[in-house]
Length: 344
Ligand code: TLP
Image (cartoon, rainbow, N blue to C red; front, side, top):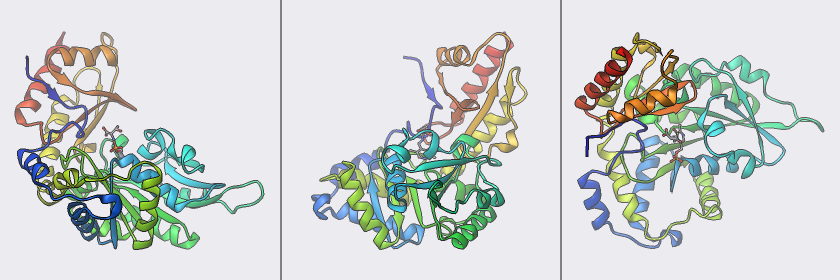
């Protein structure tokens, strides 16, 4: 079979041999009964890494975000979200389905909502009007091409939240990418929010799993919510073991993903049909608009696929993501495929 370069997502990475070995050798116990030492180690490490009191191992980022929204809200309340955020657009409506709250989407500049706009949208509850209780932010911002949320913006959001006694939840699925690009430590980001969800299964290459971190009380309640959602897992140390390796050993290589994304972005920007500002590619996600007289987006994606280059259609056009299983040669193959197709 011809080689495939899979740029669809950083979720497609295969576990490393060391991760597979750790899975085989993991010490395990019944985690629902609190007996799995490997999960406990991972939860402690996750909390310590983010400077929070406690951590919870979740099967997915979606479940981590669902638990956070449910824990911080009650029915008849409203949550401020960024208009293109993952939690609002791509998590199968858990805000309304599980938490039964209304999302209030706000426009942003590359994922950073305007603090004044947030303040204007905080509701004084009445018989007609829901109470705002939570602000959700996302860093890096997936649908804004992996943009890094500026620390100053997060500080401004915190200030408003404190003024109105609101909670802030950070969807930090790719918070290590943000930290790698900005030089701001993950602890500094986490300090500004009440809870963080981050994924082990994206750039960090674990096969499964996301962590939710926050105060002890929040995580204790979150553990009950996770069980209620069917996320209580038994001898799950076999999945926590690669998660530990992800957290301890896979952060340092994210800079290579960022470098490759930049190389690809620079090479394809300016090709016929492609709208892309390479300076906007700050981390490992490239999203470009595509409008070509000969190719629709699905047609162009098929032409790429015929050449072994896999990518995804997304809000705003086409998405390419770099990750552990994409090397310099994959990037070169992709550039060559773009040239070949768009020259015809
Ligand atoms: N994102 C996935 C898809 O859902 C699009 C991807 O391929 O990028 N927050 C953010 C910012 C995410 O990008 C994702 C996954 C999640 C949460 C949800 O994580 P999972 O897929 O583990 O539920």
